[in-house]
Length: 216
Image (tube, rainbow, N blue to C red; front, side, top):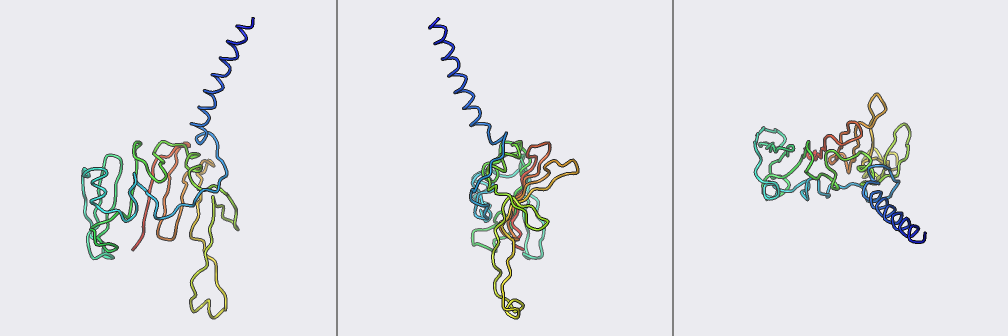
């Protein structure tokens, strides 16, 4: 009898350990946890360690030569922007205005699993995993709902000086949009008016990852 009890206890312990392990592995896919993680910033990697401003040479060193390259004239640069196409998506390279190292990354689009985007998220991941990788401290301001919202004071300008006051502007935030069925359609984070990332969602899973830098 004691032997049976011992065997049953051993089985129970093993099952409990396995269950706990499975929970730790998949908890981010099953639940959304309120957290105070660092907010998204423009200096973070957006593609396997590559950031906005990473050069064409760094891109090729990390991911190899693109399968196809298309060039398009952009008047704001007075030069050509390169679209580098890979099996998994596309990277846009702007002319070297910001640095002396040649063309640099301003846009990344990931459409297939196997390539890590911001904070390690991949196509096919649960939208809940996305929320858990970034700050999740939801609040409602007016008619807008945010995953987080960081307000900053504007710099002095003539209008503000005339009024003798400063205004707050919302530039750093996270948000969610929904489709007509009330399902999550998109999760997006912005570091400023010029830098942001978006996870497009379908049936609860990431279907596309976009990172953009609008410097012009």
